[in-house]
Length: 188
Image (tube, rainbow, N blue to C red; front, top):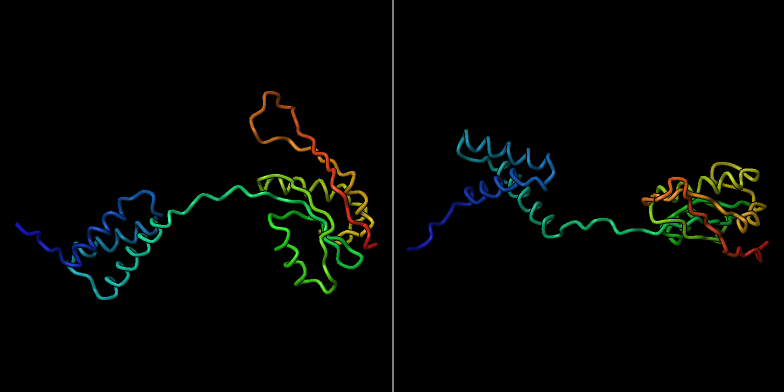
């Protein structure tokens, strides 16, 4: 016996039902599929526009499933000091090269990264380190995250303490970060 050919609408209905029942697909897509199915059940056909959107939805879900969106990789974050003229931008980033380019677009002077230090694998940790660094250099603050270049020698002695986010045996246990990095002061 030969297989019975299913019409394109029947194939579409089956795919839309799969989408509606798949909890790994976002709710709005599942609701959209459910709406198309409800219309088909009452009218027994799709308009050309509905068929177009149904096919696009099925195709998009197939592509997303093929790609299987990977979880974010753990990033490394860095504290940095970037010099522009007589001022220094102190901050954190996951990519120093890109951050330097971003700062350069809004700055008339040439921007150079004179100091960087790895400060964690989460943005939360990096923000906490940055905040401590800004407080440490607050005497030299010009505006926002910009400081006078007189703060650069301070960074050699910058030793922030940060609570560890990993499970600890002792709640008061903290990690101390010794910054043994050297700052290139030859440009002064």
